Amino acid sequence: EADIYQTPRYLVIGTGKKITLECSQTMGHDKMYWYQQDPGMELHLIHYSYGVNSTEKGDLSSESTVSRIRTEHFPLTLESARPSHTSQYLCASSPGQGWYGYTFGSGTRLTVV
Amino acid sequence: KNEVEQSPQNLTAQEGEFITINCSYSVGISALHWLQQHPGGGIVSLFMLSSGKKKHGRLIATINIQEKHSSLHITASHPRDSAVYICARWTGGFKTIFGAGTRLFVKA
Image 1 (cartoon, one colour):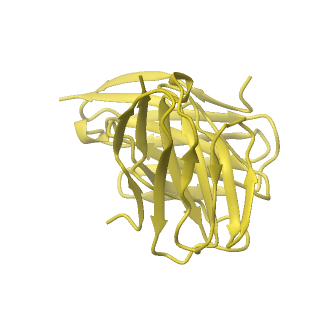
Image 2: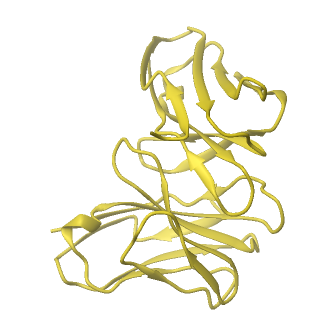
């Protein structure tokens, strides 16, 4: 059973709309990540967080923003969706120091029309 | 060029066959991660290793640090093994580099 939850699972939205993709984890992990994955391509890091009130941009330029007000919650927001934002967005988390691999959410498939 | 290269990109096998998926990386690592992504998109962790070999059920992962190479083997493959298999390397900090994945289809 997944301990990291993403909603919605699928989203089709019009250009210019503001959207928030939700991600919550129940494992108490300090580190959380957002990845973007186009079909058949590798995952690219767009945002990460080491803990509450700590957020950083990843390698892939993104027009999205994130917040980390609570340990368990790491939402991603697009202020004005564009067709170029169409992709799959995957949230992941990992515990504290070192690297213990990731636990991934099921992803949100976003289509902007 | 991705720093993590997987081969083959696509693989079709008959049920029962022994399968090998390869992963090569260009920079030294602290750990390597094998993941499985099902058609629905969800990603499951299979192995994390920094040396030697690990086994779980019909899955075996090996790594050769000197040659910067890892392999994932599936023994007695089954149609439910059909998925994308991804390797990812971690060199420290927040950064993990993912391969593009190997798409495996096992025919009954």
